[in-house]
Image (cartoon, rainbow, N blue to C red; front, side, top):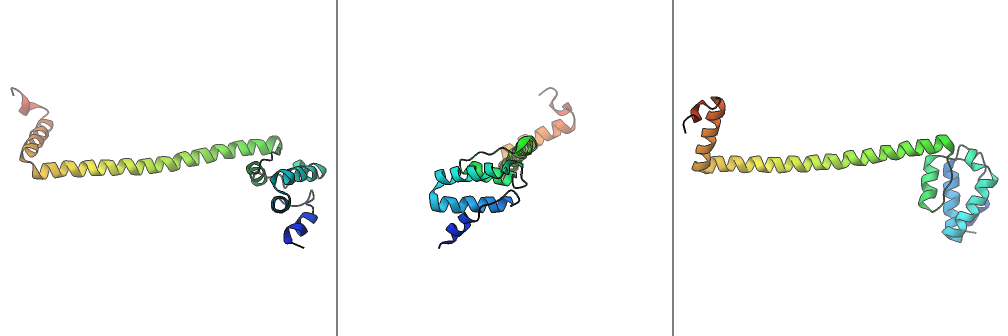
Length: 146
């Protein structure tokens, strides 16, 4: 017999871990397909009062949700899932922010390099830069009357 069939025959119980329940569902999917696997899984989960067991973790709920099956985590489990989702959102937000920051810093560096290039190789730009610099240094006194 195949390994999947052997796993199916070993029904998970109330005391089994979330990993055992996930592996059992995977074996059910291999043999019966997702729709029938979900139905069989639900029957055993309800029979074992799985929603009250330690196997009812966010990892298991996420796996089952990805496979089209919803189970409740109870008040505490659902709250934990909610705040975990918020944490994932902000984690993604900060990751995007990091890359945006790198992109903006790159644009700024290229712009400054272009300005330095203009100052170094253009006499007219260099003269204007000196005039602006002296105006700033003297608080505009050099620009009075011009």
